[in-house]
Amino acid sequence: MRRPDELSNREARWLALAAQGLAVPRPSGSKRPGRAPLRRLLDELGTIQIDAVNVLARTQFLVPFSRVGAYDPAQLRNLTGPGGPWFEYWGHAASLMATDLYPLFRPRMKLWGTDQVDNAAAGRRRAAWRKANADYLGSVLREVTERGPLTAGQLSDPRRRDGEWWDRRSDGRRALEFLFGDGELAAWRSASFERIYDLTERVIPAEVLNRPVPTIEESQRELIAIAARCMGVATVADLADYFWIRPKAAALLVAELVEDGRLLPVSVEGWNKPAYVPPGARPRAPRRTHATLLSPFDSLIWKRDRTMRLFGFHYRIEIYVPEHLRTHGYYVLPLLVGDQLVARFSLKADRKAGTLRVSGSYLEPGAHPDGVLGAAATELRELSDWLGLEGMAVAAHGNLAGALAKAVPGVQGRSGDAASRVRPQS
Image (cartoon, rainbow, N blue to C red):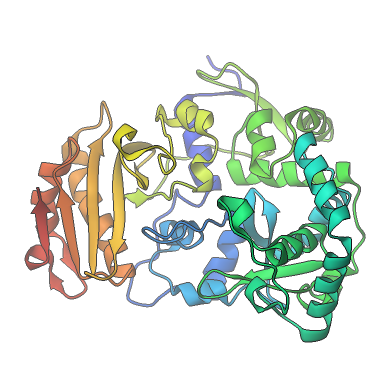
């Protein structure tokens, strides 16, 4: 007989899916979800990672689609900016978070303002650049103060540079990013994904800025408690990763949360380290019956070893892998059906041709195609419709490709029978 503090692996999956908003069906019907479901979603997830890769759609738009369905992306953009309920900062990488959480990141901003970042070598480089460019940093801050919201390209003296990756960025962009990291500036995104910067007091509501600033320990403790709620069940390392807190510090804070009764230790079948759940956690089978495609940067699968522990799913982002060495493709989305990750698809939105290109289709070992094909085809069609693409092309790569190409024509799209709009590719 199992003890109350023991969870089967399946029960752990149920807790994780429920915490991530993936245990209940997406809303159905022709009415698009508005601001309220998006705001509730961010409260549920705590943070949504932002990423520039737009081969399909940027991850900050894909994550809500996975939960609430075919919403208008403009609604998401309108939640950020001056006075908005969401703000952008370094949470889990560049992230969107509820503005109510802003005070919890002010201690991090203070550390960054003195170049105390996790990597000592990076901190020394930052400090050297800050010292060498102190006058320029001051002039950039004055220009934003006087002119109002600006992108890096709108600075009067952007000091453009040549080079690769970060070195290619202008000194103006670096200065704005320093001031953003320090908390002197806040930022939001334009429709073309550029950061727009302005003084923090003109972006974050005064009521939020006037709240007491916690210590670094207090802020990290609260962020770990939020992470526990958003993850459902997690080890110390999992909890630390959610908001990028050092594991050694996280271990002490988790112990304090356990002592305070805000976290409960549990053991999970197959896990070799203790896990923690919020009080009152009750595993329940998910009620979502339709399939769900997950962004490579979805918070359910951020931590790859946790994804393996929960789902037995080995996942690797291959964006930076040379093409001839890739196993599954450039931008690969896992497919969730029930409480299992059963397949993965390499996808691209060919906007010029109006086509969703499925360049690789792969069934996971142990998954049966009969339980995957129809659900996958429906989800791909819904994704294609949301992206405004009229057709779908299925390439003959992967062990599921042939069957998928035959299954897709039976799916109904908003503009009629998809049979005339879907074709296999060689």
